Structures are given as structure tokens and as C-alpha cells.
Length: 285
Image 1: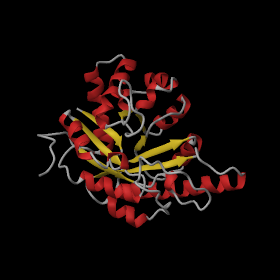
Image 2: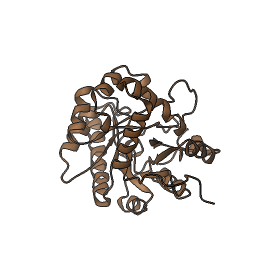
Image 3: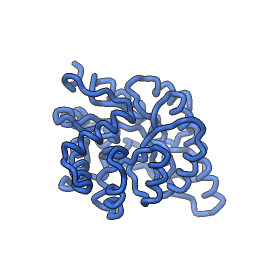
């Protein structure tokens, strides 16, 4: 059994065949967490999860690129939504209501993203601070609900580490799609966080060394589908392909695929409080 801890079958890329994609995964003993990026996709991922008694879970949250900062507008990926939605202001109570459902196992994906940003120093400073404010609110929600956090971080590890060190109280979570350096990885590991790896490990050479150094007990697998398709596959990614991520990590760690599967699955179950399977993983009638 494997768990794809970061999928997006709630996105437009699967509008015609999400059920078939989920069926393929479950038949191959691959469970999944579908992750929200704004209110509409968070609501959709919960709706999908509730159709399945086992094997399909939800995470809800507002991704930083969808945040209405009032300063800078980013382009929305056509694979994500059917039309360009309005940027959101974070509505604490609306997300809290979604997070009350037992199918929701995390708040995410949330975090910091400085890839698309304003050009002037003044606007950039305000832009970054707005993202950090909303990140704090969503961490507060995770703490209130007793849920882990799926952190998104792009070109912002220094600021995210700084924010995490300021947190009062306990928080657990994963740095999704980790692409930082070893010093940043160590900082996250020392704070008790997990590192999530997906198809990007086939592209960024430095990640091999990080995977070697990081304890397997703190690594979880993900696809980030429909993006980052791992070789030998091409085109749209899906949860079934998480096995290729697992095989690569097993090679790097010089472990059997079975041992790697056992440990990373236990890691995901522990972090997201996912019960082990007992019986079939089929869809409800």
C-alpha cells in the first residue's frame, strides 16, 4: 500500500474522468489526499472524499497564489479551474466549516509563494506581508481543529522558516514538493516537519543528496498531480504514478521497495491520522 499525500483530482484536469483515475489507484492499493487551493477546489475535494468510505481524503486551504493581496494578480492555471476565478480574501469561518468534516485530514495547501511578484520594493514588501498574515490565520485554524498543515513554499523558504519558528503552541505538517537546500531541509526536520517528494526529484539533482541525508521516517510520497509527471510516464500525472516516486526513493536509500513503502505509508498515516485499511477500498454505491 502507498499513500499519495498530495493530489489534485478536484482540478479541472480531471473533470471528465476523476472517478476512473481514483478507481485505478484504489485497485492498486494506492490511497490519496486531494488538496484544495481555494474555497471552490477545497469544497470540491471534500465532496469527492465523501463519496468513498476508504482511501480518499481531503485537505482544505487557500493557496497563496489565489490570495487577494490587492497588490498583484497572478495568472491562474487552466488545468486548475474552468475559468479564471476572483482572487480570495481568506474567510476563516467558511474554511473552518469545511475542516469540521472527518474526511478532512489537513489544512492545505497553504504557505508562501514569491515566484510571481510585484516589481517595486514597496509593493513587494506589502505583498509578502499579506501572504504571511494569511498563512498565520490558516495555521491558527489548523491548531484550532487539531489538524496538520500541508505547506507550499516557492522561492520563500527563509521567510517560511522564520514564520514557523514564531509559532506558539504545537503544529505538525509537511513541506510539500520540497525544493530547498539541505540547510533548509535540516531546519524543517529539526522543527519536526516532514518533507514531501514528488516527480521533481527526477529534475533537481540536489534532491538526491537531500533524500540520502533525510531520515526515511520523515519522508512522505506525493504526486502533485496533474503536474510533475515522473518518468517513464508522460502527460497528465495521477495518483497511480506515486509508485515511481517510491521506487526512486528506494533506490536512493538503497532499500527494497517494500521497506520504503511500509515506512512512508506509516509516516503518512501518523501525520494525517489515517487509519490502516481493513477490508476493501471500493466506492460507495
